[in-house]
Length: 386
Image (cartoon, rainbow, N blue to C red; front, side, top):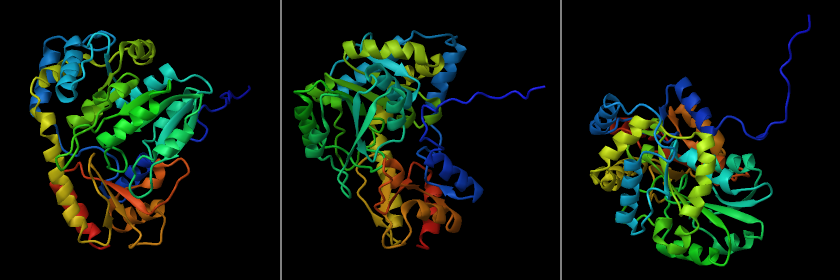
């Protein structure tokens, strides 16, 4: 009898393996380390949000919602954008609820990028961008942010734009560097793209984590960007419920029409009770308005402790990440240092080289401070050995 054989086929993502986040989290578990690598909180959300979702389930909101999302949640998202940024999106035609921001970004890319189209990403960047572009048959064009400061280099961005450029992805507040784009930089981007047909994905999942009195400069605030942009955000990041995987996209109706064509055959729609509960919870803006102060206190607590080590702190103006320069501590490269730190000190971090297409190593690693104070203090106690 012939042994059954599983057919082989060419991989659509031949260069993709296990993500650095999975690798470091597994190492953290193996060595019982404090995990400051993967970017999620180790504390719960507001019980009122849980109550709102439970009430939605008890009220019978357990069947398919409309494909673009529950109307009351789309209306709440549109109202929030209008209040914060002064731009009015039609909740019926210009807001869609997604299964997290990662799905939103993939769907926007699949909806707009044809085989051979070029897509500009700014390195270092979130690790889903490049595989998403490959799945769409696009060509990844990597433009580095300025090493050290992580500011956009508009001369290099301009040089990367060609007649084949379909799309550009920007991210502010920025993961992994914890920087934010200024209004002047957004205006420069607006002017640069004005004479082109380049579309924009503005990844704004950390929109409510901007510190020291600064303002989040959403693409929605700049008419020339808003007219060409898919603006992506995340309830998971904002409300400490990353496992719920609920996000949003705002875009002009013409762009959203194409987005929804893919969305309806990708996930079709997103779980109903979470949407209803989130809509109820959003009646009170305080949780997201108070988020900058909440995370700034954690940033400052963690930074104060790190100052007792030989690690050199880089500025953290947004997100819930803290980057540090390790050059005075070790001769190891970033990845090897992170493995050494897990094994020898019991603290997990992420090498910034993992966010670069070419693995560029500048002796910088990233910690996540979206943790309970006790978790941060436990990590700092171990890091003082550096």
